[in-house]
Image (cartoon, rainbow, N blue to C red; front, side, top):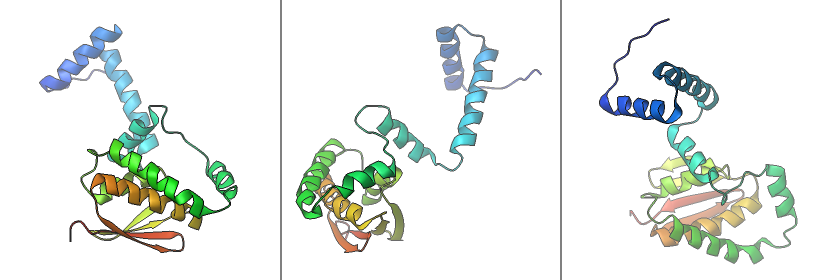
Length: 175
């Protein structure tokens, strides 16, 4: 089947670059692009673009890893006292806050990244308040200090309440 399409100058330039770098015809590049696009649509139809971009960003290097929840549960089961780890998790949060300082302009955007990492699910209570639901109370107890430390470095003032395996986080810097 023959197909005629109109491309804007930016897209045409990208197509030309792909043709030049790959040594394939324009038709082959477009066929391959459509195959990739179709696979992405099928695979990621339930994932929004921002979430996908964060997955790629976090997992394309060696600093972040995918762990099965059983691995996390096994490691956490070996912890004698959550309290002994909380100050360490707070410090790790501060380090992350320094590293990500220019990435987040709101508490919600900061919290979404950890949601993308499957640490919890977020329920928006209002524009400045979020409920984070964890798989266990221990995860909530460890991630609370992490989030506090990160927000300190990001310049986001928060109030946090723990209710079982939920954390209610309120942005007090906008009040």
